[in-house]
Image 1 (cartoon, one colour):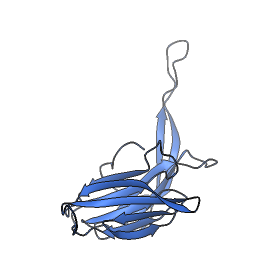
Image 2: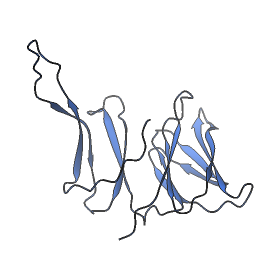
Image 3: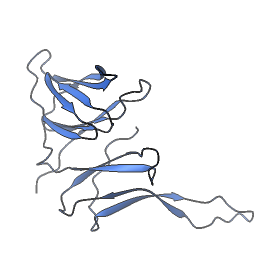
Image 4: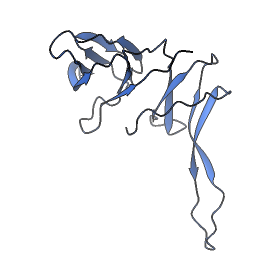
Length: 181
């Protein structure tokens, strides 16, 4: 998974958002190209409450009508404040997290928000994030990393792929929360 969090966009007035890919056809024998084709890649529907939302885009499972799927999570500062971590399990398998000795299990396709407390043991500037996955009945660590405790930021941890050691399994982002209105 490439990229980072995008900049915030103004919420459209419609609840359904469709992401398109613009395809320019190759030139014909005269050197002219046809009109640009807008091919739908993803469609999501936002709740009608006008709150801010985070849309996480991933590849769709085989047989889906569009190549991408989007999962929608409430993203305002009240739901996900500074000094917290939102863990999003984007896999069909259960996952687990240990955040500086705070342990929790995260079900398939579930989001959990964890309050981050200042570290109390070891180096008091860093928190240890460990993520695990249950494979063949046993838990194994799939990601182990230290992060500086930054109380003014909120964090995201996306659990992407628990079974492939060759691909990124967990992606972690930092973000300043929006200013409350």
